[in-house]
Length: 215
Image 1 (cartoon, rainbow, N blue to C red):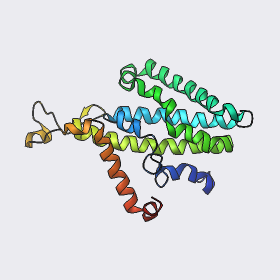
Image 2: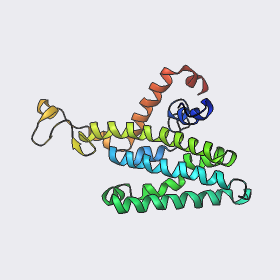
Image 3: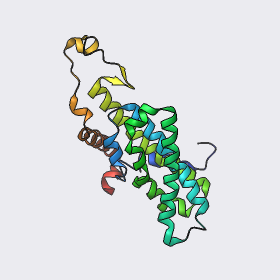
């Protein structure tokens, strides 16, 4: 972060931990429940939100002085919808099977409260450069949680990571399965994501007493 001032660096660093959009602001929980059964889907969703939020923040910041206040929400929705369409088309062109897995959830990025929240709370009142850093920081904070949840859900629920068998083969009983290990089917259903997110919140707040006091 040597190229950035401390204040600008905090725009990226704060959402990674002490102001995380999922674990602290409790935003974007729906996608954390819906698409984190597989690590690959979690990573792709995180990258999609990174593109939409960072670019969307810049566009809204550039337009902030010409958007009539009465239609600002409509303008924001049009901007995010256009960016989501780009993401959806790129996925269909280069990762069609994965785009089918994510299906409707990519479209629902449009209603992701993290994105609309950053447009309203930050992009409308700051320069494009700062808005870009804010978008990067909040998208990374969101993405980190998705990747962590996806990692544990796929590993414990399916015994795989990115589709590769890492614990052995449950059919031929190799690896951990040779000593009686069984995949935890509960981990691949949405309620498991709430448990993993809850554990992350507990760990985070146990390490920072100020977060407990703020809560």
